[in-house]
Amino acid sequence: VQLQASGGGLVQPGGSVRLSCAVSGFTSNHFDIGWFRQAPGSGREGISCINFNDGRTYIDDSVKGRFTMSRDNAKNTVYLQMGDLKPEDTAVYYCAGGTPIASTRSYASGYKWWGQGTQVTVSS
Image (tube, rainbow, N blue to C red; front, side, top):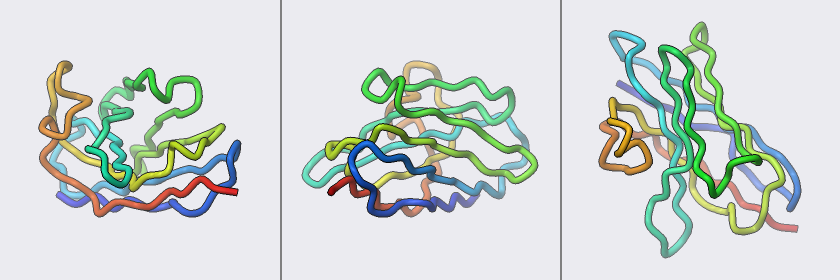
């Protein structure tokens, strides 16, 4: 299984960016893809996840209303659309794959495979 995150960069406060996570190697669609972020000096924070089979999503309260998650099964790609970005959203963003149970979907321990991370910097 491989996950390849892309789409980060420098964004002005209030701006938007879309991250992509290309997924390969899964033998079925019955898995979740989660997005995590890690700011300098902080732990890895789970912010969203999506079930690749049925598209059900979970968005953490910390970003709800600003971030959305979607998938394109034909392209084997998951997206994180980030809007109204704030300086505190600055972090390395990771996508991760696995089969977490509901209580672990926001925790890194719930995922087995990880992408390499992409930097998002929100600054004027």
